[in-house]
Image (cartoon, rainbow, N blue to C red; front, side, top):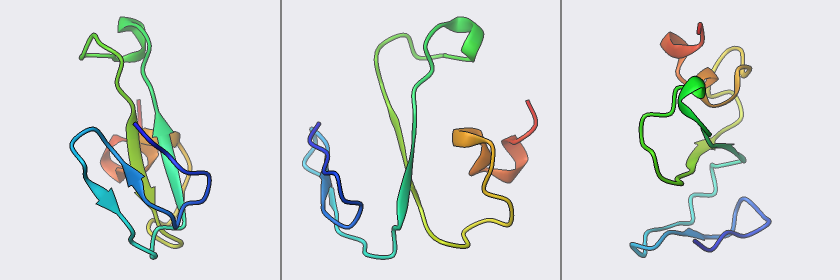
Amino acid sequence: MTMTTHSHKPWTDKGGHVTQDTSISVWNVGLNSGEATGKTVFHAHWHLIPRREGDCEEPRGGVRGVIPTQQGY
């Protein structure tokens, strides 16, 4: 996977998908390591979640925090 250091530049995955969406201001990056963390897919994979200013009322809670119904765990 190729990633850039600036959020407005393209992020490309192995499938060739590219995003140049300039409304994305930052990214949440998540990785679960081990069953106790809730990991259900047992190979290395990352969650890349695009974030935009004001996309939720309270932007806390990491990866689960971007989905309001999943914040309590």
